[in-house]
Image 1 (cartoon, rainbow, N blue to C red):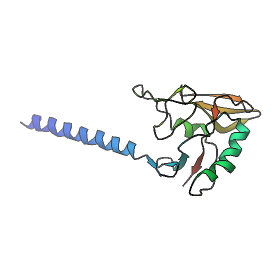
Image 2: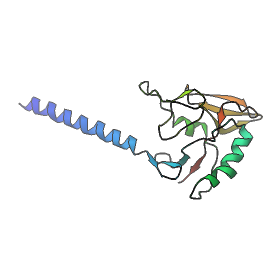
Image 3: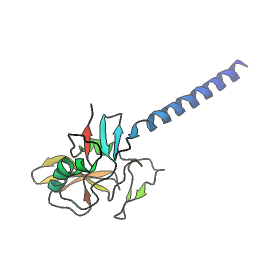
Image 4: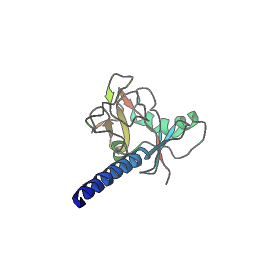
Length: 161
């Protein structure tokens, strides 16, 4: 009888643990209802969408700082291009998650609250005439010349902590 009770107790505790982990994971992101999403784990605020068109790195950098903030009903400051690590944190590597088809036809695997129009997103990490780009289609990064635009997008982020 004691072993049976111990097994049931372990089973119940395991269920509670996995449920709590699931709830915590869901609470990582909050839709703010104003075109932004808060990432409580990293202390970041993301745009819900990218710039919706091909854009060079220089254009992307200017768009996130000067144009994007005016599209929001509430004014926030300090918008910027994300780091490579910040973008990687949005990628869903789970083999069971198929993602969704972006407007450009790519299948992207990003958290569902963010809608990308194409899967390649510029980062803030630059070296000479190149910048890092993260692919939400494949979960990899590479460097590309900053003047290239085809398929590249800008996804604004700001630090809130």
